[in-house]
Image (cartoon, rainbow, N blue to C red):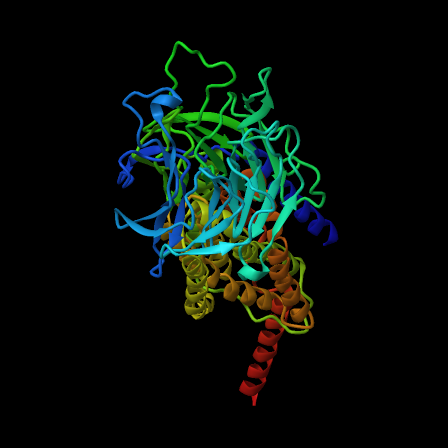
Length: 627
């Protein structure tokens, strides 16, 4: 028996390892970030347009999202075609707070002072803004613009900072680099972080380890999977005449915010990060992050030596960085060339608010696009499809040949369970482990799921609740059917449905499809537990029943505990491919169940006892006839 169990365990392990090796090369095959221009939002109320505005989303009472845009600067007295500072005239900074809701802009409030080129990002309480500058100089003030347009003061920055890049991770605002004076010798390489979760009087700025190399202004930042990325920008130095000059940068660096040694920069132990391949500064920021991809939109790509014979125009390029593959690709053009512009993510929509199309030239046009996941069949998907068809065919053939009725027999409680009784416990342990692994995995991947499939926290709570509700309602139905039909076939069907739904979860494109997928998961698991426990107790009716059910139930807690591995795996392959891979593992494991899981039948001892009873009855009957 021991040798047989060892062989079974080795076969299971080898099969799962082979599946992961086969699937690994296709880990990114089903992911595609497709940017499609979907139209434009209404133009900014200022017909001249503004550069250096702050903008982001805020949540209304009904759960919908509105866009807040504020501040910025332009040249209202510029002559047509102005290309020199003299022709542009004085720069004007603004205090307006505009709000975009229901397709219309309206004046929502006023900033305490005019400002432009501040660091900003949407946080839970509103739009956080830090630093920036105006005609009077560089600022260190920090503000929170709320949904109704009102402004709350936050703790000021440790030093005045402008032209810094910015990003948010949950409720944390990061202010990266920038400059602290009008004509600095170098740019800053500082990183300041403010957690906006506590009350205002308990908030404080924290200085993180400075990023390596030269300081930089006008870089673009993003946070993806707990890594802070800093892309491009300009370093500063003094030229021979004593003026501050810019050097355009083309690199990217990353800071792992989960590292136990925050002084070390890198990207979760990843190889050297690839830069965008060209100098770029002042791209739309914070850089939008979707589906483990960072979008770099527009920017000033003049580099170190712009051609004076050619007119300067800002870039329209859409560059996409694949965080998993560490590669950059060009995915089309933005509707307008743009720089020093805020990027706003609202649901599946990405928009830029105003900005400059050339040095000193503004546009009131707000461009919009759709970016996200689009279904493409990969090697993993084809493997799931083929294996599902094969397993279903085997189940159907088995049902036709052997029937679907429950044929479990009542064994003698004093009979010791045989080999197949313990094989059933072992193979079902892996099934229940997968069931509960999937439940916990959804919560472990909460952040990337909510980022890529926009939804409120209440909606995400509904995703988990619909599973439990359907699971509770259908569990008695599962028990009713398990008493009447083959428990082995019910377990097999449940595992196939579980596998397909797990795979489907990784391909959900919107909230509705995710909600339906989790509801279907409730159906799958409701039909597993009653049949599995009944099958185990069919085999184990004597002194081994408790240990057999106890071993099976231990798989529940192992599955919940190892869900963290799934989250780690998602950092390698993306959360979608993690679900797809475990869907493949589930349907492949169904083949192992077909080979090693059997409905209990009459044991030899039971048969012998039955024959003895029959013979005794016949003798008693004959004796009664002779009387």
